Image (tube, rainbow, N blue to C red):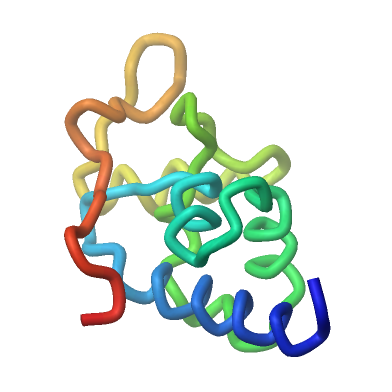
Length: 107
C-alpha cells in the first residue's frame, strides 16, 4: 500500500466509522472490505487507535467478527450498553441483532 493509498484508506475508515448509527455495531473486517482492502482488518484497528481525532468518532461501535470488544478497553461495553446494544451470556455483542451493514457507504 502506497502512502497515498494509506491516506485514502484512513479517510475511508474514518468516514465509515462516522456513519455507524447508535445502537449498532460493525466489524473491523467489514470496514476494511468497504474501504477496498478486505485483508486489512488489523489496519482498521490501528487507524482508529493512532489517528488524531478518531476518538471523536463512535469507535466504540467497532468490534471483531465474533462480537468481542477491544481488549483493554473496559469502557467500550458500557458505551455500547448505554446505546441499547445487548450482549450474549458469553460477553459478546448480539451480532444478529445489532450488526450494521449499509447498502451504500459514503452516499
